[in-house]
Image (tube, rainbow, N blue to C red; front, side, top):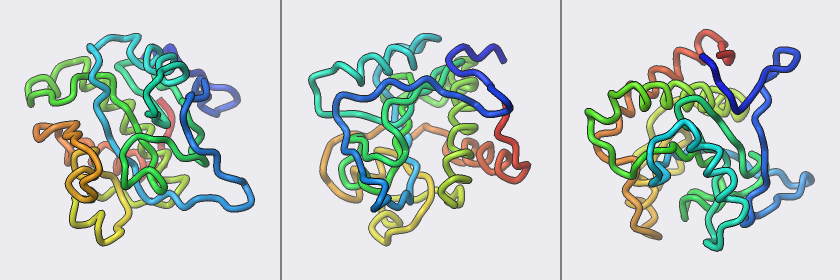
Length: 196
């Protein structure tokens, strides 16, 4: 696939890491429980360097905002370790892992179907499957009502906003093909396939 921002070493996928400026470290003696994968759109132009740009931005920006991972059409980068809290979706920060997709905030159905977005979602599904496997999360969609009931699974920033009313973000938008995305995640998990 020509992925440039991570490499395999001894069968292990290594993702480049640059610590975010703003995050909350969690002591190893009291690990946090991860219940959610929260999908976002980063409000950046679609480009093959989007994940790398987000990595650098997260390390130096003046906004109190961060995320665990960023994904574009051929890259995955990491800004906060899964064990620590990133500031990506108020209400789901403490128990969520945030994935920023390098695209606009509310792409149309046609935009989600283009070649860039399809490649980006394939990488994001690969990443999400690994997170679900590590934290024993089933790849179910959790809507706002489910978040309030403390269900575990995969959600979006829009659903977190609806549930906890601590922001105004509506990404990745109503046209995000969440069921197709979750089918890709489930296929990876069913096959035990986390290699690209």
